[in-house]
Image (cartoon, rainbow, N blue to C red; front, top):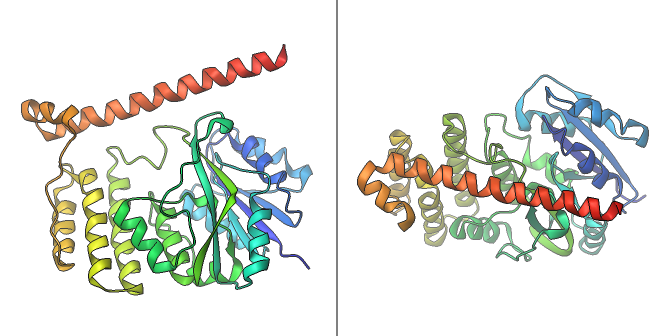
Length: 338
């Protein structure tokens, strides 16, 4: 029999996107699939909208709010598939995404092989997504993947992966301590347990920039900063467990340097711990710098206000781009109705 693929969708207050996301799962050309939606205590219409798809065979359950990791663990516990496709409640899959990856599964055979795909950001119009290759868009061993990710500050989105049940069980459950970067930490474990990553270029995943207030943005949240710090410590441990060498330690120091500005100057105790961790790896962290656009603010008003101005400017810019894309979507729909 052909393998069953479980498409698992954790959802929280996703009423704007959930129908489109479920639809992208339903139209997958791979016929042997189950779709499970776990509503994580939403306070909007997410649960009601998801239940409208039960007639199409979609399983919908709800639970008290436990966070994204808790919802994912619930969905996994309910699933029966030989392979797992994670799909966030605002993201989309190309119709043949799973089918193309399963074709490669037949070719390579090993249940420990991990399959990835191309992915791109979008706001409202997936047709405008630009698929720009990164150094991770190729076949890689686990250590080379993590080394490249951490040294070059590149990442892959959760929906790109197709993971066997065997590999999923080897990696263990999602870490419910993490409010941010729980996916980065989880897939580090999946990658470390795999025998290698096979990139399937024809498969595509669409990663929605849903809101500047989403969990992916750290901003000023101390809970997210704590989560990011924990995830960083775990990242370093995972890479060094695969290969403890001069090059992997250097990649870890580069990774710490990249994320250092997020904690400065708000969390000096974390800055100190990161500095000590870098020293234990044989490296040194440099004081973070702001771009020239905000350096003059730093000189006059200090680092804290300069960083605040940077955060506000980034949020405003993204909100403008999001509003513009939404307006163009409405215009496109009006034209289609004429």
